[in-house]
Length: 274
Ligand code: URA
Image (cartoon, rainbow, N blue to C red):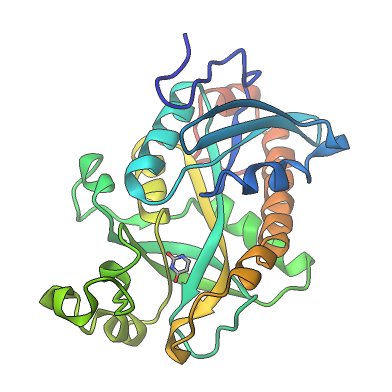
């Protein structure tokens, strides 16, 4: 039987265990375009959840869009986990909040500030939202190999784009940003948070609590320190670097897993490395 929202089953995904998770359904074929032999196919599209299937290094892999924010991300991750997927790499876009991070740079998230709501339905707020060490390591190694400007650190992961990221160019403007969030951008900056995005805290907490592996790489489309506005041309271009790094990281993880004793891989014991 198909899963409720993603409209997938184990047969359709050919028991794939590895998934890329962009937010945007339009990015799904872009990512699948980097799979082996360009033979990837679309296998489902319901609401914001679009899935393509292909192979990387001979292994079945899928790419599924999560839509924006924690609640739809939780559905995507939960339903893929139900089908046996154990490794997730989110590939998305982000707004930097540190001066030295330029538009076009990539950010690899080590851990996320939990400004989402979905993750508290999976674990208490004291539980950390951290990337899986092995996915994180694979992303960093892949970024190094591609000679790209990248930053590694903490991300603020917010369920809202406007108040949660302290944006005043919203419908309500200044008046309706609640007190708790006024000054929050500066505070995160001072606490060495690198950027804002909207899905990693949900992904990391669900993956950790279910003993799955997850990592996150995002491409910077705006630097909030300079009060920039999002430029749709830049957003369209901000795709290739993060995708290439994510593909390189997944190849490393797949190759490493092949050297593990089968049982440990099958059991989904993702705490183990080599
Ligand atoms: N995604 C976000 O969540 N925030 C930004 O500023 C840009 C992309």
